[in-house]
Length: 321
Image 1 (tube, helix red, strand yellow):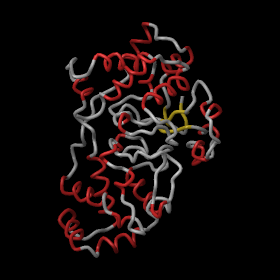
Image 2 (cartoon, helix red, strand yellow):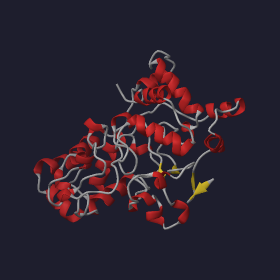
Image 3 (tube, rainbow, N blue to C red):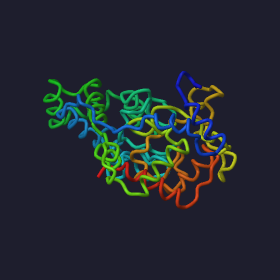
Image 4 (cartoon, one colour):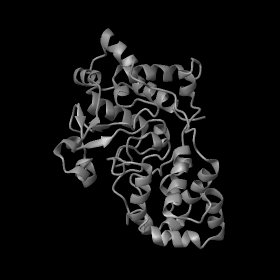
C-alpha cells in the first residue's frame, strides 16, 4: 500500500488495527521482525563545520528583524522543540503547526509534518524565506553575516572563504546531522542489558509491538520514515471539539491529491517524552493522552491506566541519559 510512492504500513498493522486484537502467534513472529534499532550518530560530521553550524543555529540575524533564531523554536532544553502548541516566528507571527523536534531529523524521510521540504537543506531555504519564520533572503543574510569579523573568520577556518549560501547551508546541515540522541536506556536494553529499563518500560515495549504501534513507529528513530493517515480506524477530525483548520488537511494541502487528506509524516518517538504538546496542531497536552488517542484512532483500542503507564514508561526510556 503506498501514497505518492511512499510506503505506508505493513499488512500486519492493518490486521491488528482492524481487529483490535492481540496478534496470533504467526503474526507475532512477523511483528518481532519489524526493525527497532539502536541509533547511531553520523560518522562523517566535521567538528569544525558542526560548531559553526551551532553558532548559526543560535544567530538571530537569520531573521530580517533580528528577533528569531533557529534555537527559539528548536530549543535543546525542550527536546529540540519549543513547548508551544504552534510555532512563533519573526515579529510574533503565529504558525499553524506544532514544532517537530530537530533531534534525529536526519533520519526523517522528509522534513516537517507533511514533507514540504525533502531534505534538511530544503528546510533551511524554506524557513529562511517564510514570512512566518525568518522572512528574509540569502543576499540580506549573507551581508549581515559577512559584516561580522568573528563569523567571517569562522567560515574561513571551516571552508577557506567567507560565508556563502552553500557554506552556510552546509554548516547548518552538518550541525543538524550531529543532533542524534544516542545513549538512551532503551538502546542499552537493545544492546543486551535487561536491567537498563524498568519492568514497566519492558512491559510497555511488549505492548507497543503487540498492538502494532511498531508498524509505523519503527527504525532507528521509531518513526519519521513514512506517512500515515491520522484516523485510520475512526475519524479523528470529526470527533475533535474545535473547528477544522487548513493544517488538518495534511499532505493534501501541498499536493491537492485527495488520497493525501489527513496524511502526515509519522513522528519519531525518541524525544516524544520531552516535546509536549503533541500532534500536528499541538492539541494534545500530555504523553499519556497522546498514547490513548493514538490507540483509539489508529488501532481501535481503548487502553487501561496500567497499559498507558507502561507504554509511557517505554517512551521515556528512549530519552538520552
